[in-house]
Amino acid sequence: MYSLIARRGLLLLPVILLAGCNTVVMNPSGDIAKQQSHLIIVSTLLMLLIIVPVIALTFWFAWRYRKNNTEARYEPDWDHSTQLELIIWGAPLLIIIALGLLTWISTHNLDPYRPLSRLDADRPIPADTKILTVEVVALDWKWLFIYPEQGVATVNELVAPVDVPIRFKITASTVMNSFFIPALAGQIYAMPGMETSLNAVINKPGEFEGFSANYSGAGFSHMRFKFHGVSAENFDQWAQKTKAGGGALKRAEYLELEQPSEREPVRRYASVDSDLYHAIVNRCVEPGQMCMDKMMVTDTNVKAGMHHE
Image 1 (cartoon, helix red, strand yellow):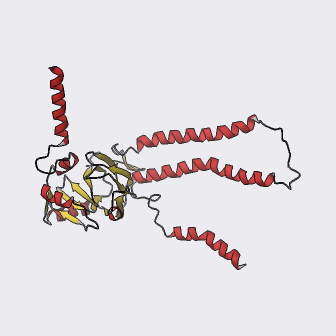
Image 2 (tube, rainbow, N blue to C red):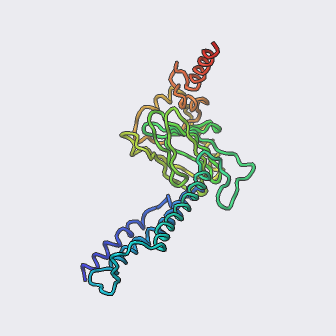
Image 3 (cartoon, rainbow, N blue to C red):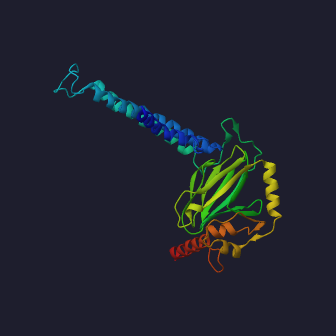
């Protein structure tokens, strides 16, 4: 009796342990992440339509045609059934078609580069809504957030108003990382010399976890930040407070910040060079470096001149 109770307890242990988990991916606070979680659920249910019957039939056949079941039909020369073939091939084919259509539609609707068309399932974006732009730089091993319209910057702290579309412009300083806030949207790669984008919106106030989802070296484990969803009024107050706090992020300060470090505390900068993000993307922060975009224009002009000659 005791061993039976112990076995049942072991079976229930994973459920008990998972009960205390915050499954933020499946219960997010942003509309894009909600659509992604819905996609996961629907895709899983579609696949279970074939997986569950196959597993059930495996056990049923093992039991039905066991050696000591003399009532089971024995047909050693049987080799074909049109009806059975239709079921075996037709059911998976229909599921694959459904998954393909679902993937096609969701891939376009949830394209991270696509501007948002709604705040959530019940609310379109008001016509007078102003999009918040945030420039994201993945450093070793910390995150830099630049607010070009507010003229401020932060390290390891991201603040955004609730129900306001956010457009993230994302890059990296040295190696590839991945920008990921599970409560907001899916992960987007941050790569040096390139810019990726993410459009998202947070629908509930709160403090959420953000981190790098791509291994990038020794300090990767601590490359985390807090994302605060606040009211529009509180966001304006935060921006004003940050702007009044002092401290400037110029190119010299950025080059110092760019050096590898771990467990960096939150920093705020009251001002930031207007062209700093452009210089980071184009690899020309240091004095005397030619920006990549200018280099490409120069190369194009040289090639065009050579072609005309």
